[in-house]
Image 1 (spheres, helix red, strand yellow):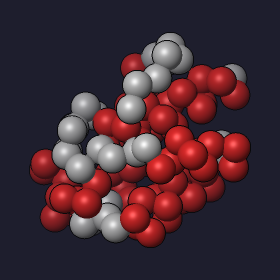
Image 2: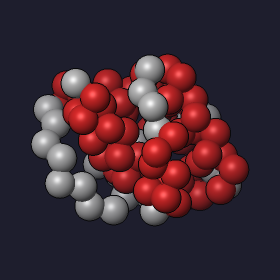
Image 3: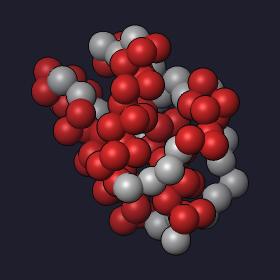
Image 4: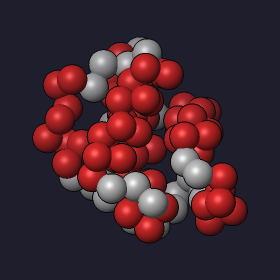
Length: 92
């Protein structure tokens, strides 16, 4: 998933840390902010992905309700970080 929004590294790092806390600790050593690991390989089903995005919405205070189609395009951890980072950048 490509995003054209520009956002700073601090925002991306904050999003990544939030995501990392929500994933099982057994996968933490596999994670980096630019991981192309499919979420399914991290133990997340389609419903798990939706739950992750919902938790991010709650934790970060962002509104993702207008972005449901974009959520369907999220495949990797990098996609999640870029997606939420773009939303945060727009809401600044």
